[in-house]
Image 1 (tube, rainbow, N blue to C red):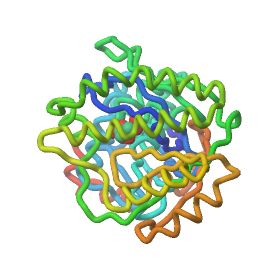
Image 2 (spheres, helix red, strand yellow):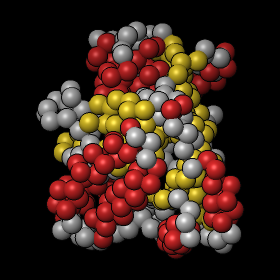
Image 3 (cartoon, rainbow, N blue to C red):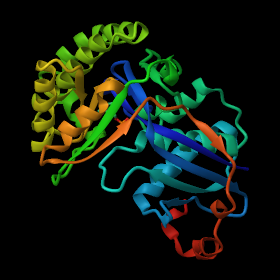
Length: 348
Ligand code: PMV
């Protein structure tokens, strides 16, 4: 009744931007990502007949009500699938550098999906795990797989055809992805809110929908042919187009900050000097730079010369979900067991 799973985070090359169903996390468009090898979440789920509420321990601390509710909502889906009513202790650790500002919902829900499904006795193949992870966070559907991954949007209203599948294994194309952390202070618009506002109000959203399928075709072909420049061009253009939709929303917003713009300008000028490097940006100010391993060190050095750049983490394509043995210290700690009656917000 317990299992431990690890999932890496991913960066979108062709973005998922907009939901057609918010409850089932069904996207307006298909997307492509690379699973990264450096940032991951490890999650242990232990279902117990003897506890009367879910407990969520995140990075060694009991999580707050809002975080716990997200986990409980997700476990409710798993419980329903398994026909069981057991509550669980969920113990999750993020290996994402502190203050890196990197989204961890993809690795978080992919690891939770895999660990909880296994712990409750569901024997799900990867496609089914992808559908399950999607219902925690859309981008999590892609983190089930390693390497280059496509999430097909599907057309069904029940979401049964909306899941990810691998395009190219991680060992088959060793690109470098530099994760550039820029100084940031402002409050961020969540991806959920950003998508909703853009879909409902942006004058530019129809342009996004009209062109994203073509971007998918180009990216898919470039990955299959290992054509780095073709891939880089469509990745950068697709990111700029996604971010342009936010400027057309009411009220308008942007995820970009001073450092974001400086990194973009640097990458474009390096390219003008003949270096093959391209950027992409998710729903936040940090930038991911794609380049070939032979240029990795030079691009990194240039990035670190910018005063707004705080860190550059070098990543490569990483693996999909893995299951680990559950270590003894991940079992329900004695003090949490005895404190549990006081944690009234965890009860349903
Ligand atoms: O699934 P979420 O809520 O983490 O949203 C992801 C949104 C983007 O990162 C901007 C694009 C993507 O495809 O990952």
